[in-house]
Length: 79
Length: 139
Image 1: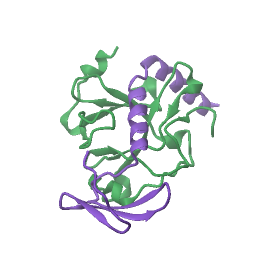
Image 2 (image 1 turned 120 degrees about the vertical axis):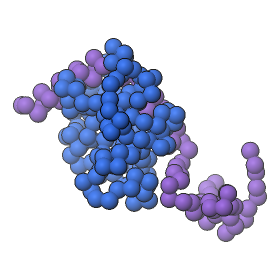
Image 3 (image 1 turned 60 degrees about the vertical axis):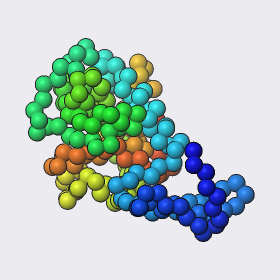
Image 4 (image 1 turned 180 degrees about the horizontal axis):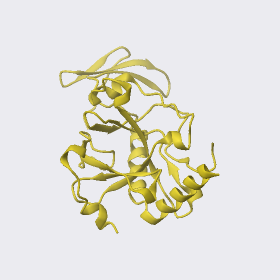
């Protein structure tokens, strides 16, 4: 991993079109400003991981279990 | 039973491209939506690569009529949406044996431009929702 030292207000540039700036600093938090092309997804790592995990769990959904809850949802509507 | 999804017959014009894949499955970049009466109101988002990968999806408004994810315009830019009617919104669901424990991912809505047939899973920055919102019981 590349490690760079930056001061408050300084930036790094990734490739020619992504800039990450240190916007705010206090004891335990760093606030980053990110300037990137709009099609570059920027996410908090732990949220991305949570989504990955949930997708993995979702892909294991069993057909019969889906049928079962689908029946319930349709039943609710008909009431 | 998984064979149904592996041997799926579909026409090219129904294929929706997911240029970034789906988090966790970044290599699968093309899907079709399969609607089968016995699973309604759910549908299946099926990978076209023959791997059998598929997700059950649902329009989240069906069980959460007040669902209003905070999606930034920039997040949708690569979908080339021209008008609101182009948009399809789905949530991926995780179904358990006990239906009461089944959940929908409301911070990762799948957004599809049905005209251009491009889709992505958007991650919303909103503490109102989680990846595991109960499907039954809450109205």
